[in-house]
Length: 428
Image (cartoon, rainbow, N blue to C red):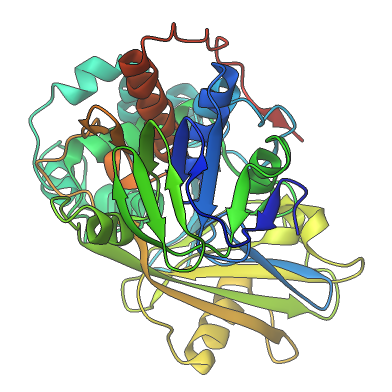
């Protein structure tokens, strides 16, 4: 159990300035921002551990993420969030590797136009130029573009269908967890812009390392686990078995569905489902740390990587961890093994299947029209944050927490603490 958490005992009418419901990334980050401003905070969490969807299990010495969130080294919010100073990101090789319908693999998103031309590919040069222009645009300009479904927008931009279908579609499906690309084109453009400006990365030690850092650096006893909240009001949170918590304000930091159950006016979005499949290899598998995308729509796999080549802490010495993501329900194990054999050009017969994690509501969908800054202030004393108020990424979850804390402090009449200018998180 983490040092800053404990199971709540039976109490009534416990007092804190703010009660935060939910100890996922957003709730923990909001707690940090509020405590930095001198506000007393209690965080209530139903589960036995903080962290929410950023969970990492273990088996045979391997560390296995449940949803396998991809972060980016250019994310600014980790540096603005107290408690994440110790976060180390493990970046993938630059760009992505795409396995085409023709069976050939090409690197995308990492070439400058000049180098792409030198390599003899006009398609790559055009794509690099288009991505370069997007990376240079200010965010406001991207958000001012016409909005439609991402796939419609992609097809209207004059790039050859082989580039759209062979590179951009699998890349955006991976960044957005949306195989049909029904996401808002503005959100998609921002995702591509972030991709080009940084490197895809994962937290060293597993996804759970990020919420663990946040939880462990809160004052002891701030987070109370195993507490089921029954109702929320501006100055009162009632629980199933742990009495009432009185306060001056409440921040709802649960997932979208749980939030709507406690605040019936909140809309429940559609969700994208994700399956993450972990295999162990009996001997190390040589790999350069690339994220490998499968561009062949006949196969269910979205992307795969030798995760232990990206983050060695996730596998015991002498073995490799292969992590594969499917956008949808779990496919037959045989289908997955057969496709991975082709993608990695090696036999998978002696690979061990360690875990299959299926999450039906992995991330909220973001169809057009989508407001990337959905309101976090319901009314004075009641606030809501999470990836369903922003973009459905770790960056979005952290940003919505800072927005909610800012709105609450403004209502309290407390000057906002200065946030550091974002420096990029440590990259190993």
